[in-house]
Image (tube, rainbow, N blue to C red; front, side, top):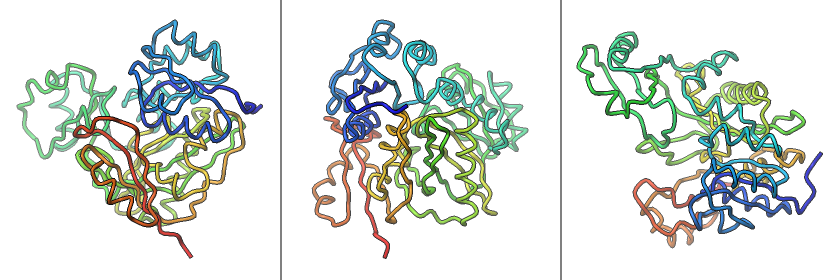
Length: 358
């Protein structure tokens, strides 16, 4: 049963994704309350209310549950225990299981392989000796990552053709935390699919975007991606398989490597709206943010069809100084996140150039 207009949707996390979810919720007649420890966060500037507390604060979680008809979240590092505690009182979408899978890279890739979706080879690594042995198995090359946390290129180290030892201190330098070594993939390009699953099991997937990263941070997402139709179909099918296996409700981002023969290796999943889906604001009638609100509120999913080709670009740090020039361009949609200070590596906003098709 769908939430009536005027109901309140709780959002854990007050960053730009929470901000855009709150805006989408308002367009559909919903109120939003944000749980976020940082005062005057981007989401609180547009939400109806902010609960200023830690994400795992028991009293804050009880308050969020009491005032919300449903709760969702804007980032994948929400404590699973917090999501479970909320779910005992109020519906929580996406389900806590999706968080549990996505928060640990070994669990994530194991899950993907179990449901028949290929990934790069991987091994868990707990010390320098295991790193040495596993690197030899991978021919001396691989990407060492923290199993938990880490985003936008953080918590990673790349090894190339390192066939001898000499890795003493590597795990300590990575923080003495559980690690994963992934084999290097000779991919031609990176793509991602934004998909949604409704409470009734309906799945809707947007066209794959072709992504370019700089310094580990998404730089641009381009539509259409330069891939074969069958590759696009396979990416959408994989995303549908993932959300069905998780009994998922909401929007998910799934990143893939495209190999020379057009086949795919899944890189990671993000159980939330995703940076590489921001283009949907400008090039689709139903954005990923509205789609997510529709899903968690029990409304019918919208048509994910794209009406325009486009390129979305992130504004990182001082890129925000380009805003006056960007606003002078035709066929450009700008979205700033309300952040007062620009810092290196900080996402300040994005813009999408559209090219309407005849």
